[in-house]
Length: 396
Image 1 (cartoon, rainbow, N blue to C red):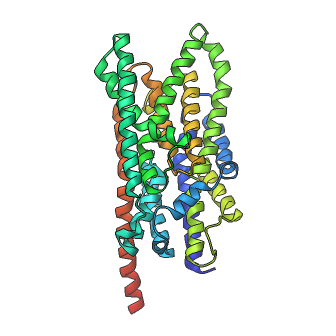
Image 2: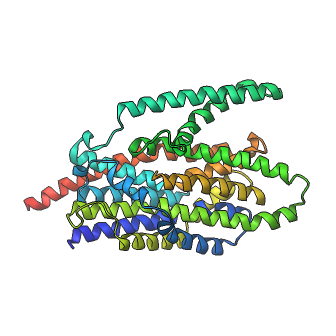
C-alpha cells in the first residue's frame, strides 16, 4: 500500500476519533443533565454502543458520502486527504471552544471544497431540476396544511392565531419531506437531502419531543416524582444507548465512506464495496474518541439550553434516537447534534418559551449553517496551497 494511501486511512481514523470526541455529548447530554448515569459510566456505555452501531445498521451513509456528493473524477487521494484534514481541523477547534459541530457536514464541505479545487464546480453532484421543483411544491403544500391545521387549532383554543399559523407553516413545510420519504412516495438523496436535513433534523426532533413530553405529562399527571424517576430512568438510559448506536451507524460511517472511496480512487478496490476491516477500524476509532469525551460540549448541551427533568430526558432521548435511526436507515448523513438539540429544545419549550436559552440555541444554529461553507473554503484553499507546495517540491 502506498504511503499516501496509508496516511489517508490514518487521517480518516483520526476523523472518526475527533468525531467521537465532539459527538460524545450527543448521547450522554441528557443522562448527565438528569443524573441518570454518572459521566464516567455514560461515556463508557455510549462508546461501546458507538462501536456497535456500524454493525447494527447498514452502510448506506458510507455510500452516500463516497458516491453522491462529488463526482468520481474529483475523488483523488490528495483531494480526499485535504478534505479530511479541513474537517478534522474544524471539529477539533469546535470541540476546544465547546461548540457541538456537525462532523458529517464538516466532512461533506471538505470533500466539496477539495473536489472543486480538483475538477471545478462541475465536481459537485447537483440534484435534478425536477427533484428541486418537487421539493418546493411539497414544501409549500406542507406549509399550507400546517398553517390551516395549527392555525385552526389555536383559534379554537383561543390562543395566538398568528403564532399558531407561523409554527404550523414551519413545521408543516419541514416535516412533509420526511413523512413522504417514510411513506415511500418521494425519494431524495445526495447533496440536496444533506442540506435539507440540516433544518429538518432539529425541527423533527423538537416537534417529536414536544408532543411526546405533552403525552407523558398528561398520562402521569397524578404520579409522584420518585415514581416517575423509577419508571423513566432505565428507559432513558436505553433510549440514549440506542441513540449512541444510531450515531455510530451514521456519523461513524463518515470515515468508512472516505476510506472506501480512497481505496477505490487508488485502484485497490474495483468498486465501492465496504471491507469489513474498514468498518471495524472506524468503529474502534469513534469509540475511543467517545471515551475521551468533549466535556465542554457536554456541558453546553446538558445544561446550557434548558433545565431537563428526568422524564423529559427520556422524551428527548427517545425523540432524537428515533429521528437518527430513521435518517440512518435512509442513508442520510446527518449529525446527531441537530436531532438531540432539537429534542432538548422541544422538551424545554413545554414549560414556555422563557425556559429555553435561545442565545445558546442561536449560537449552535449559526455554527450548523456555516459548517459546510466554512469547511468548503478551508478545503479549497488547503488543496490549492498543497498543489503549490507539491509543484515546488517537484521543481526542486
